[in-house]
Amino acid sequence: QAEDGIRDIGVTGVQTCALPICDGRAYVVWPDVGTGTHVIYAARFNPDSGLSARFRLTPNTAAAQTTVSAVVDSAGVLHSVWQVSSGSGSEIHYQRRQPLGRPSQRDTTIDDVGQGLQNPHLALDPTGALHVVYEGTGVNGLELRYKRWRPEAGWDARSTTDRKSTRL
Image 1 (cartoon, rainbow, N blue to C red):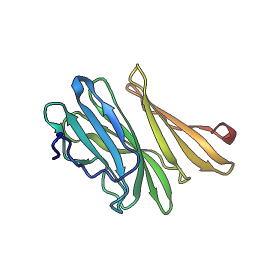
Image 2: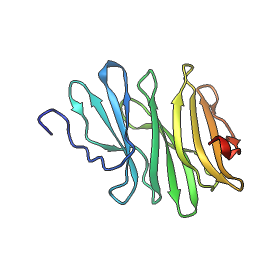
Image 3: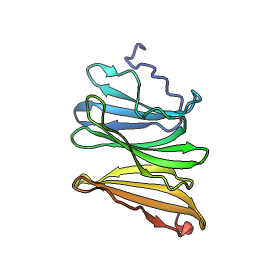
């Protein structure tokens, strides 16, 4: 631990998200692409104890986990989406993690059409609904894909796709 109270948590990736929670607490989430295994890590920050040791956010897989996007709701629940890429295609996964402890569900695949799915971005609206937008590669080129999660209904069964690549 450094003199200023900031601990080196081994961030070697390029896309790091800092997610504030009430009371000065926060999460830091990042893909670690420097280890060769391409996994997603997180750490918690608490103002009275500093930054925790990093922990594995996503489950073990042989496929690369290269991008992540996350939000924290008003109850301090961490919601995250990430891209999983293997030689046969890619998938977009989701996880919900309570403020303390393990994820409340290990992992949910929200899209796995086998096309080049990439660059997921997650947003939370005032009603508690989650919105994820990501890119896909279809027969007509690049597509913009969208899915919504609502507390009373879960994830939309199908994604909405904008095939007009000129909008991307």
